[in-house]
Amino acid sequence: MRQQDMPLRVLRQLGKQVLFGALVVAWAGYGTATDADSIPGRADPNFDSAFESWLSDEEQDALPALSRLAHDGNGAARVLLGVIDKKSALQGPWVTALSRQDRISVLRAPGGLSGQNWMTIAAPDIAYAQLWSRLWHVDGGLDIAQGFADKGDTRAVREALLVISSRRESGFPAELLAAEWFPATLSYLAADWPALPDELGTGDQGDPQLRMSGQYVDDADLRGWLGQSDLGAPLRNVCDQQCPGEVSECSLALYKGLGSYPALAMLGSPVPDLVSSDEFYQSPRGRASLARRIMLTRSARMREADLVRLGDVSTCAADWLRDEYGRYAYSLPTVPLSPQ
Image 1: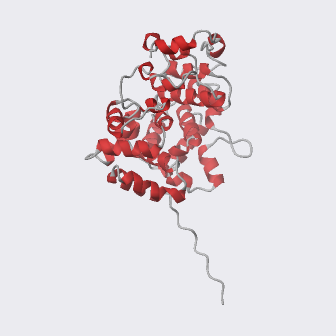
Image 2 (image 1 turned 90 degrees about the horizontal axis):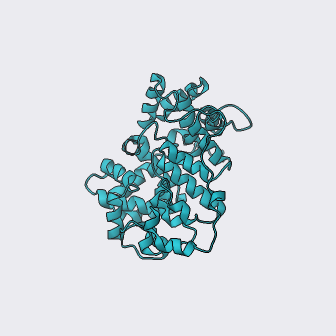
Image 3 (image 1 turned 135 degrees about the vertical axis):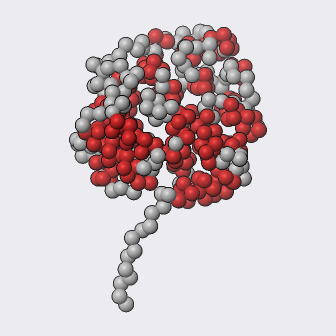
């Protein structure tokens, strides 16, 4: 979004005297971290093998191998494990079935009572890891989002902006939304929201951001938006694999399963330097991570009722989600009855 795309918002900002310079700190790098355009260790054949196993959803083989590589100093393994440890949606059935101690052992570095996230260990040497570590440790602000933009990780930019906005309980000034790196997909984070329709700059009646300003968005328009927008690509990639006969209906059902536009904005490659978003959501682990994310939006008691609702939109999508949920159902140990 550019300044000329939102004249009314700019007018509403006049007289507010927003101290923009206090909000946006120029990205200049921190510590001794090296450039993360290419994460060190990703070219290691051992990492490549373990990573491919992980994308194939073979956690029982991949994660112990990645853990060994991380202990041996492989930066790519440390970054990937750091993200998996922080994102429950990236943890599949094998991980979630582990005991707490075993999960700590396979996902974290030694140290403290519960281990340390590998991203913290990688931060002094890898600029990309340092950005994540700072965001998670509330060490910085908008410079972190801009840093992710400099690294080309648009998904991380969105996550950082959503996190920062939530922490501040406020939106961002017009000057920031006009910045080259600020994503138009988060225009609704404007400080003076709700915006008027012509301020969004998309011209698409199906854009879910319109709902943030109290407007009605028809499901048919929303389905059309999901079918062509960049944010809808993860849903389309999953549906292309799981429900090729009803991609449009499947995408709408999965969006409704996510439950919110911000949840959609959080989708994307976990580490773009390792795998593109399209490749990730075409992989077994990527597809499973989307189902897991949807699963975690509902309590166990509400999931079946929710699947019935989603089935009215796409039977195929609902059936796939039900199968995925079933992978996390574990049999309780049999307790022998006391003798009478």
